[in-house]
Amino acid sequence: MSDGVKDGVGDAVSVTVPVGGLLVGVERERRKGSGPNRAFAGLRTFAVTSVVGATGNPGQGNYAASKAGVVGFVRQLAAETGRKGITVNALSLGTMNNWEGSEELARKNCIIPRAGSPADVGAGVAWLASREAEWVTGQIVPLNGGGITA
Image (cartoon, rainbow, N blue to C red; front, top):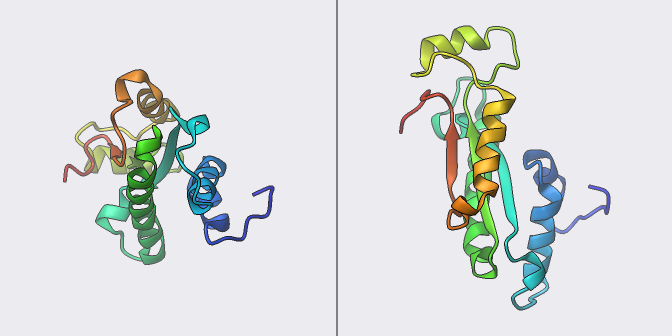
């Protein structure tokens, strides 16, 4: 992060959450004990996590734990910021078409037999940012082609 924040949120958020600067900004306002901040009303924040946070994956305990941690952080932050008009949600991605073998794995494991694309993720973000989703907060939106249905 460009401002060198070392207050407990730190770099893990900026790495795990692509919009880390926004989440850190909201967190700072809360920690200062400030009242409702109208400047943040209507703010939509998004985290990206993985289905591995919910399902686990052999040999990836640290990755699964970090993604499960994102889920807990999103839900907690949503509870703390909702009354200020801020929504906080996460997109939980399944198999994406960004590595060799992903299409084969998706055909084998997903109800929709293909790996996800950047356009699929963009559609999820566009919906969460839309007025239609202004009442959605603290949710983990699965984008996984039906790879897990739990």
